[in-house]
Length: 199
Ligand code: VGL
Ligand code: ZN
Image 1 (tube, rainbow, N blue to C red):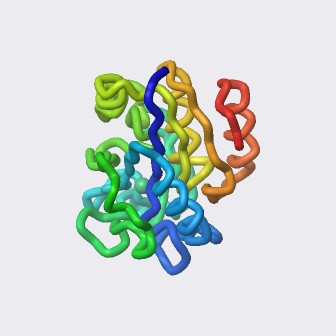
Image 2: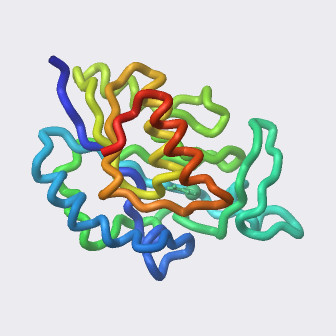
Image 3: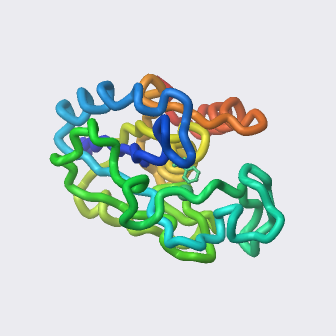
């Protein structure tokens, strides 16, 4: 039997109330996640980690507003308010998150020209972050995903993990979504179809 890991996606100040890209109730999951962190032998965190002037920021594109969609060389890209800038307070983990036990922190979205929702691949779906190799080398085959946002970074991480052959559970009580134009229902359906267990 392979090892299990908890993967905590982007529980950062900018995705919590008061942050630059606040997810409604985003901070409500922190106590639930702390309980899970205590229970798991292996904990991995991800951290959205953009340079300023990142191409996923609406401010980078003249005349564009946050939450509009544009076409990038790698496909469709939603534009966001400036968020999770490297080293800024908004990019820090929520102060209540008990993350000290984490064995690995995966940073993503640091290439200026491409966004990265998934913990496994950038938004071109081909540039790897290295996480799959790390988990495989450590004999970890079962993943429980929690965090923010359900319909973006959690969902794309879960879909990639399932495609890569990991057993994947998403704990919905420890996630919150953004829900842009029906994105939450769409991603939940895709996750179910991909064999992700929604708990
Ligand atoms: C995320 C939008 C932009 C997320 C990150 O963590 O779900 N969403 N960057
Ligand atoms: Zn981002």
